[in-house]
Length: 174
Ligand code: SF4
Ligand code: SF4
Image (cartoon, rainbow, N blue to C red):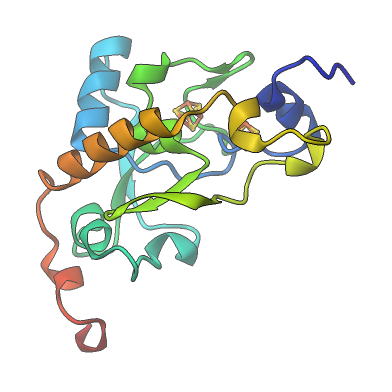
């Protein structure tokens, strides 16, 4: 194995990546930026989450009220027949970094409206491929300052989404 190869490339040979079989929520701002880049807007759809874990957002009320529509669906990127993201190509993501959906840019940082966690990362990356002493964020060349900027942009854009009355009600009234 080429230890100098970027972790995401090794990840792609080792396992399913975060771009495969994952439901990628997009804000209206994401849609606008991507549409301007690719010249079409047929890359997203409204879908119920396949995995119930996506609807489990009790720790983030703003997410719950702005991401989900009354029928429980949300705006996500379309997938290819094999469930790879529609923008996943042979060399990885075909979108420039600052055009990618904000949740893609933030991964694997974990966050709520309150902010990006300093001590908690999403669990999907193959940390077993790291060499001794390496840490995930450094290896991925990800920086908290970028995450904070994208997090602010994400929640600013979420606040522009219509509020879903169903999820605004107390959960026991649903
Ligand atoms: S960010 Fe993590 S899960 Fe996604 S391709 Fe890179 S190593 Fe794999
Ligand atoms: S938009 Fe790019 S980074 Fe996000 S899931 Fe699709 S291929 Fe991966």
